Image: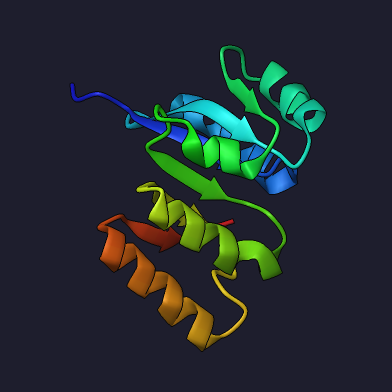
Length: 126
């Protein structure tokens, strides 16, 4: 079996929690870190998923060298910014839907993923 992909979750909302709850059943991924706008929120979230690092900022999550892929889960208007930053950090990206607020932003996100040679997808279910 190949090594599992190390996931970080950017934001600590309800849908992010659902993703985190599903990861233990994955044959290909595991949760290693979560980032929030506050350390307290990240720590509360991480405490429910034993062994997960809590980062007190989104930037710290993206700087975590163990994180290979990021689940982008902040409010929709922030998807562009954090997808662009995740791509620049070399992280593969799964973004909540809608992936972007408009077509132009979606094109920018795809271009950034291509430029940084990372995978980008939106959530297609749920």
